[in-house]
Length: 122
Length: 109
Image 1 (tube, each protein chain N blue to C red):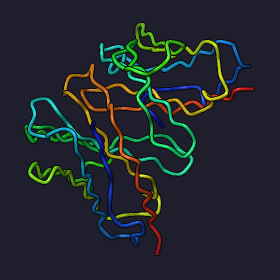
Image 2: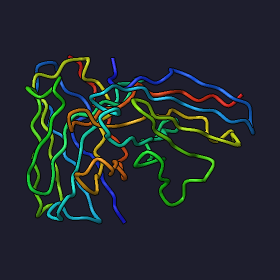
Image 3: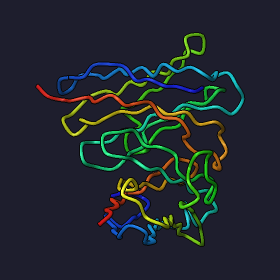
């Protein structure tokens, strides 16, 4: 049974760096093809993909946010960490992590965490 | 502005059939990339509904179906039920990067 859970601060100040952790169980990020992604959703708005990391440490980023994002994994702890620098109120959103069973495009995000709401305000 | 275009809203009466379109371009859907669909009930995380254009995960009713043609994809829901009222998102790839549609709110009248 695959589960994922996001954790991190609920409130950050403008210009600060956000660090979110996705802790998962039921799969290993050392299994060939497997990936974990981050997706966010501002209140009342659409989903926006942020980043993906794969079993072989291949990393992909949204072009519009690439300069501000870093994704890393700790296979031994079953965790994926996303950092986003220079936070702004427009970054207020629910942040989700999700499991991707394989790098091929026929494979979706099949399991999602419950999400964590991050508010950016002074 | 999402890379994939969906209608902001659709509606239908119980028992009816509705479709939700997802329009892309030659760099994403038209390039042969697969399309996936997610259902997001109010206040919850997205749930996988259709993967690989037309495949249903275990547990998803066969009232839900997906198709893809050219630069577009569609989600069809037959026998509409009150519990289907939710937001629906398509997802594909553009130059191997993940892209989502802007979402469609389905209202069951």
